[in-house]
Length: 272
Image 1 (spheres, rainbow, N blue to C red):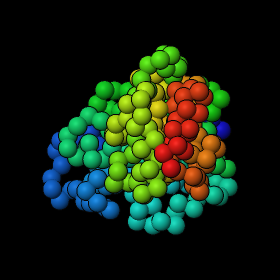
Image 2: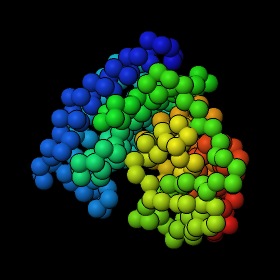
Image 3: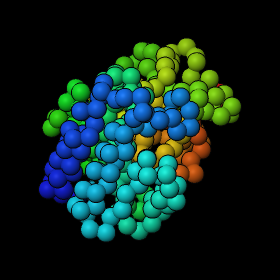
Image 4: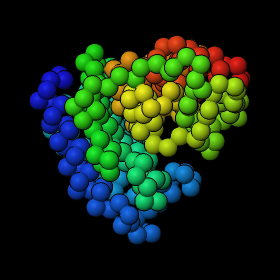
């Protein structure tokens, strides 16, 4: 299913959707084009909605019988998330990952697309339009950033781990206790920005790990494959692989290598 022609076609769709619906609205949004969903850190804009409509329309044309699970569509119709449990190929779409940053005119946003089937991510596209970065990963086919191979590598021995973590607004009391396990010597945690860009930072070796307390597929599908194909690993707090369709023990981590992932799990469990 995932050949060079499809990879190139999806890249083209993503670039066109962003060029037509996202970047023209960056730093140009009016107040009535921004709406809060569940709180001040959970925003949606007309750019999110229009870009998701564009991506949904064009992506299903590329793979006959495929369906879309998109962030904004699921917000309006939660039952559409169940497509992740079905037999059809699923396009998982986050039209603007980092909407809060986008709204405030910051550069830290991206568009995420992944293609999955039977709970396995087959390919992913992470596009950060402001710096002009396109990261593409294929299951068992490696990861590329602007055509160059990505390798996460491993943190240097004895260095402080740089870790991005969930914002407290998106964590339960139990998850907060787990994340407190990262406040220890040898770890430097900070609040995360765009999840997609944090995953890209791991895949390129610029960030050591993340610890996230939510499991929405559109935030994680693309990045988890990117990290895996760059040599990294992801684990839940009960030391199991992350399941795309949900039901994971949280928080979970993704890291530059298996050793760092194991260390992160240990710290998260110690904080409980």
